Image 1 (cartoon, helix red, strand yellow):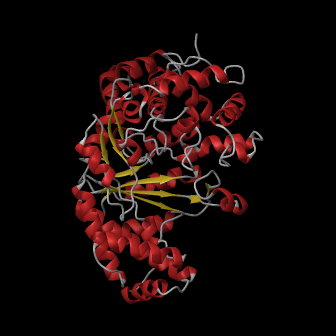
Image 2 (tube, helix red, strand yellow):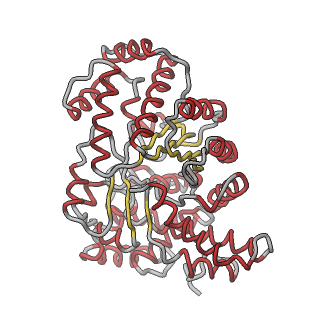
Image 3 (cartoon, one colour):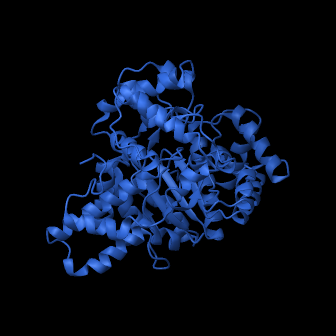
Amino acid sequence: MSFINDDFMLSNATAKSLYHGHAEKMPIIDYHCHLSPQQIAENIQFRDITQLWLVDGHAGDHYKWRAMRGNGVPEEYITGGTRSPWETFEKWAETMPYTMRNPLYHWSHLELKRVFGIDKLLSPATAREIFEECNAKLATPEFRGQSLIRKFNVDIICTTDDPADDLHWHKMIADHPFGTRVLPAWRPDKAMAIENPTEYQHYIEKLGQAAGFRIDSYSDLCQALQKRHDFFHSMGCRLSDHGMDTFYTEDYRDIEIELIFKKTLIGMTPSPKEVAKFRSAFLYDQAVMDAEAGWTQQFHVGAIRNNNTKMFQLAGPDTGYDAIHDLNMAASGHKFLDRLALAGKLAKTILYCLNPKDNAVMMAMAYTFNDGTVPGKMQFGSGWWFLDQEVGIRRQLDSLSQLGLLSRFVGMLTDSRSFISYPRHEYFRRILCDVLGSDIEKGKLPASEMDFIGRMVEDISYNNAKNYFQF
């Protein structure tokens, strides 16, 4: 039997029935990813498997990069840009056998099987033939970017976009549809990043140009963002996303925020206390904007970034040198959500944590603010980044089940820059079905309710997201 077989990750007959009878057939809504809208619009033809899988400029797969470094591969084969595509791929093939029990071992072989129909284990012995077979297929129209997406029955993709973006590529995709809707998602992190005044000044100028007027005050900033928010809404956007280390809930006065903003615009570096106050005001105002537009807001919290100074200077951000933070989330998170609830401005919300110690904290926090207006209004999001592997997914499902309603969960996302990461949805669905199937076979759930549980699997796989986001 091949490694990636029909019953991969399914440990019992009931799990197999749930997966093959219900999960397997459902379309995908990838409501948070980092695919390039330009590459989708241009229907990119990848040069080779190395570009697709490992290194596309600096927008490659930092999961694989971390593993390669851990296996002793020099940086020149990773982000150095001095080695040929074959030499980089060969180093990944050498690393592959050493990734056993890392999710990369499962994901990579799933992708080889599902995308390329290659049912071989990647190793130094098979590297050359796999490299050549993948490259030959990538040279054909059936393996261009849009076809790769359609191969996985993807209904909707939400990219990650800055408020200053003109959404040119989204317009092009909408004018030339290919069967998958590609919608923008609002990521205003740069508009909050006052800690570096020089970079912030350049960004505010760019945002002002997009909004059509000069931004000289915090009030102007809010007006500019509202104008861009309205434009994103007209382009089908229904989600925002914020990447933060923690929630910011400092008390502040409006006059303080104006002064902090103006100091930053003239090049003065704000103090840590001023940064925290500004972020508190900014996040609150953004959340109100989302609530008034009927959007869903997402908060990805718990990352500590750019920790290796030497490598950050060499390779830049998002290259595999971020890690799990260890901050307390409970008090600040509840204070943030409570402010919005008191004002009647709490939008549908998804909370994601990067530290597994916070699973129960985040889940309990979310359900403290459900108000009966929308099923599953407050969500504990899927396993993210360091937690989207089997153990992380199972723990997230357990926390969600024990403290809330698994049946209302909006399911998995890729959070990926790769056109072929969609087998991660399959991976999640197989784990979900294995969890439920095991409970049924152990007598923890009634076998007589298989029809309902089957529908629940379909809902978590697709229907809940479709109904929740209202694209």
